[in-house]
Image (cartoon, rainbow, N blue to C red; front, side, top):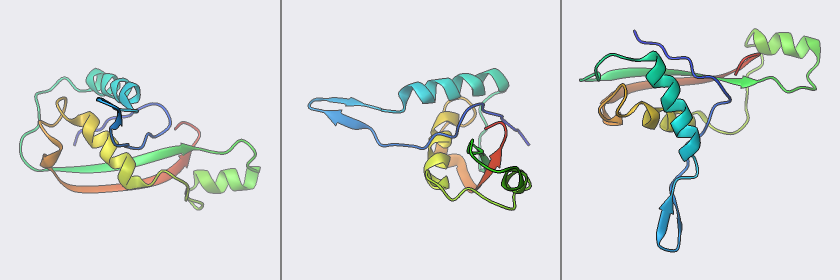
Length: 121
């Protein structure tokens, strides 16, 4: 099992956009930052063959949350039901793994993901 810890609020995937003749990715800088964190944690060769990816996305607890609700959020009794959805975040991080951990995201044959609250997103 290989585990990565990416600092910062979870980022969703977004499609490339066009401005006339030019195409650009609005999440390019976020992708570079995540890839930099992955490269710092993974120095092994690319994984070949089928891979199971398991994502846990930690969201910050809102600042105006009461102490009781905060404790329930940390105990995972209250779960985040806000945007972005897990599939968009999963796609973004699969793209970030490509070329560093996996040769292509097509090698991800099984995936699972969850959203939780944490003091440290």
